[in-house]
Image 1 (spheres, rainbow, N blue to C red):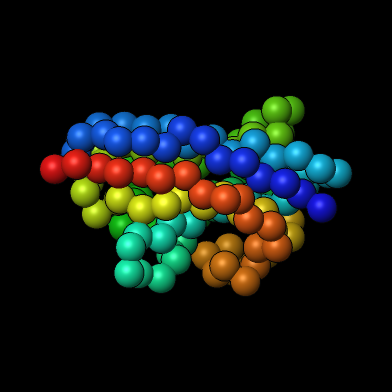
Image 2 (spheres, rainbow, N blue to C red; image 1 turned 120 degrees about the horizontal axis):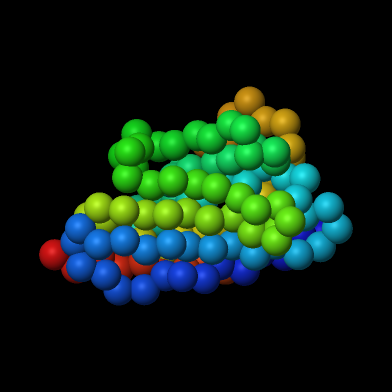
Length: 125
Protein backbone atom coordinates (compact mmCIF):
# COMPACT_ATOMS: atom_id res chain seq x y z
CA UNK A 1 0.00 0.00 0.00
CA UNK A 2 1.27 3.47 -0.93
CA UNK A 3 -0.13 6.76 0.31
CA UNK A 4 0.37 9.92 -1.75
CA UNK A 5 -0.03 13.50 -0.58
CA UNK A 6 0.28 16.41 -2.99
CA UNK A 7 1.18 19.98 -2.05
CA UNK A 8 2.29 23.21 -3.68
CA UNK A 9 -0.80 24.18 -5.60
CA UNK A 10 -2.22 27.67 -5.55
CA UNK A 11 -3.13 30.77 -7.53
CA UNK A 12 -0.58 32.25 -9.91
CA UNK A 13 -0.64 34.73 -12.75
CA UNK A 14 -0.05 33.65 -16.33
CA UNK A 15 3.65 33.34 -17.00
CA UNK A 16 4.39 32.44 -13.41
CA UNK A 17 5.73 29.27 -11.85
CA UNK A 18 4.73 26.71 -9.25
CA UNK A 19 6.37 23.56 -7.94
CA UNK A 20 4.16 20.69 -6.92
CA UNK A 21 5.36 18.02 -4.53
CA UNK A 22 4.07 14.52 -3.95
CA UNK A 23 5.15 12.78 -0.77
CA UNK A 24 4.85 9.01 -0.86
CA UNK A 25 4.72 6.75 2.15
CA UNK A 26 4.39 3.02 2.58
CA UNK A 27 6.47 0.03 1.79
CA UNK A 28 8.90 0.37 -1.12
CA UNK A 29 7.41 3.72 -2.04
CA UNK A 30 10.48 4.51 -4.08
CA UNK A 31 10.06 1.54 -6.40
CA UNK A 32 7.14 2.85 -8.41
CA UNK A 33 6.59 4.63 -11.68
CA UNK A 34 5.32 8.06 -10.66
CA UNK A 35 3.04 10.26 -12.68
CA UNK A 36 1.17 13.52 -12.64
CA UNK A 37 -2.29 13.89 -14.13
CA UNK A 38 -4.68 16.82 -14.14
CA UNK A 39 -8.40 17.38 -14.48
CA UNK A 40 -9.97 20.68 -15.43
CA UNK A 41 -13.65 21.43 -14.76
CA UNK A 42 -15.86 19.61 -17.22
CA UNK A 43 -12.98 17.71 -18.76
CA UNK A 44 -11.54 14.24 -18.42
CA UNK A 45 -8.42 13.54 -16.43
CA UNK A 46 -5.36 13.86 -18.63
CA UNK A 47 -1.75 12.80 -18.45
CA UNK A 48 0.83 15.46 -17.67
CA UNK A 49 4.16 13.77 -16.93
CA UNK A 50 5.72 10.58 -15.58
CA UNK A 51 9.09 9.42 -14.33
CA UNK A 52 10.51 5.92 -14.04
CA UNK A 53 11.31 4.46 -10.66
CA UNK A 54 15.03 5.17 -11.06
CA UNK A 55 14.48 8.61 -12.56
CA UNK A 56 16.34 7.85 -15.79
CA UNK A 57 13.28 8.10 -18.02
CA UNK A 58 10.74 10.89 -18.18
CA UNK A 59 7.60 11.30 -20.24
CA UNK A 60 5.61 14.44 -21.00
CA UNK A 61 2.35 15.42 -22.61
CA UNK A 62 2.83 17.55 -25.70
CA UNK A 63 0.80 20.38 -24.17
CA UNK A 64 3.34 20.98 -21.40
CA UNK A 65 6.58 19.85 -22.98
CA UNK A 66 9.32 22.43 -22.51
CA UNK A 67 7.45 24.17 -19.67
CA UNK A 68 7.09 21.47 -17.01
CA UNK A 69 9.78 19.24 -15.52
CA UNK A 70 9.21 16.11 -13.46
CA UNK A 71 11.83 14.86 -11.02
CA UNK A 72 12.09 12.61 -8.01
CA UNK A 73 14.14 12.22 -4.88
CA UNK A 74 13.85 8.60 -3.79
CA UNK A 75 15.75 9.29 -0.58
CA UNK A 76 12.86 11.58 0.39
CA UNK A 77 10.16 9.49 -1.34
CA UNK A 78 9.06 12.65 -3.10
CA UNK A 79 8.22 13.51 -6.69
CA UNK A 80 8.17 17.05 -8.00
CA UNK A 81 6.54 18.84 -10.89
CA UNK A 82 8.17 22.16 -11.70
CA UNK A 83 5.74 24.22 -13.77
CA UNK A 84 7.01 27.29 -15.59
CA UNK A 85 5.40 29.68 -18.06
CA UNK A 86 2.00 28.75 -16.75
CA UNK A 87 -1.05 29.43 -18.88
CA UNK A 88 -4.72 29.82 -17.92
CA UNK A 89 -5.40 26.49 -19.66
CA UNK A 90 -3.13 24.79 -17.11
CA UNK A 91 -5.79 25.47 -14.48
CA UNK A 92 -6.86 22.11 -13.03
CA UNK A 93 -6.67 19.81 -10.08
CA UNK A 94 -3.33 18.03 -10.28
CA UNK A 95 -3.05 14.44 -9.10
CA UNK A 96 0.00 12.40 -8.23
CA UNK A 97 -0.10 8.68 -8.98
CA UNK A 98 2.07 5.61 -8.40
CA UNK A 99 2.19 2.62 -10.70
CA UNK A 100 4.08 -0.55 -11.49
CA UNK A 101 7.81 0.10 -11.96
CA UNK A 102 7.95 -1.23 -15.52
CA UNK A 103 5.32 0.20 -17.80
CA UNK A 104 5.13 0.59 -21.54
CA UNK A 105 2.29 3.06 -21.29
CA UNK A 106 2.97 5.59 -18.54
CA UNK A 107 0.55 8.05 -20.13
CA UNK A 108 -2.48 5.93 -19.31
CA UNK A 109 -4.21 6.22 -15.95
CA UNK A 110 -4.87 2.47 -15.76
CA UNK A 111 -1.13 1.95 -15.25
CA UNK A 112 -1.40 3.55 -11.82
CA UNK A 113 -2.75 1.78 -8.74
CA UNK A 114 -2.42 4.57 -6.20
CA UNK A 115 -3.63 8.16 -6.37
CA UNK A 116 -3.38 11.24 -4.21
CA UNK A 117 -6.27 13.54 -3.34
CA UNK A 118 -5.13 16.29 -5.70
CA UNK A 119 -4.02 19.89 -5.39
CA UNK A 120 -5.66 22.83 -7.13
CA UNK A 121 -3.67 24.96 -9.54
CA UNK A 122 -5.31 28.13 -10.80
CA UNK A 123 -3.66 30.36 -13.40
CA UNK A 124 -5.18 33.79 -13.87
CA UNK A 125 -4.92 35.71 -17.12
